[in-house]
Length: 229
Image (tube, rainbow, N blue to C red):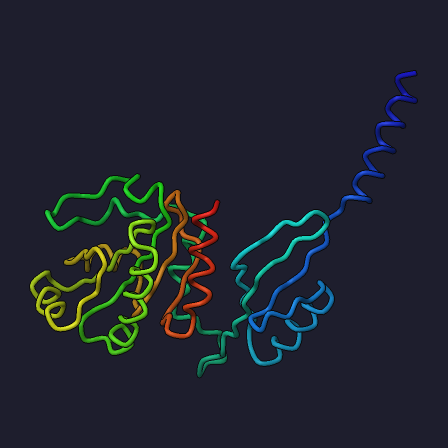
């Protein structure tokens, strides 16, 4: 009797799994939705131009389907025929806690380890003579204006507070500013500017960007999604 009951249970599980299996679909930047086979072909074609890096911006579960909003980027080869990614170091921290406790606030006191918990966080690494950093200031201010206090917005630099304060008198960045952080940035091995990070509500790193000027829609989609979950 127990054996028959086991067979019946197994059969029901198989039937349930077959009937309720979820199919993955992939939503591209142009809004087109691809099947797994079509998406695989797109990635295969893209790989002919370099190493493919895939980012899942959002995952929506709808009954028997999963819609993955994706972006594909291509890493090019350097002069030595190696793939070069200037953001390889920050990407190593994806899925892990961002060490905000290693940095000091405006009163030169260490942040607590849980300082960023409870809200998504956008962190910008920059310096005042970095032209790409300056060019993206309007977009960063737009993000701050849209999300306000619902998201932590932090700008971190190795420069001293006076240099930053003098710069902000001419061109304001409406973020919380962390200065004098050369040692902390060196420990993270960040060397490309700007570097932009997006953290979830637990303070864990989710996404890494360089310049964000062409990614406003993607970043807003990410922040909207992180606020919902």
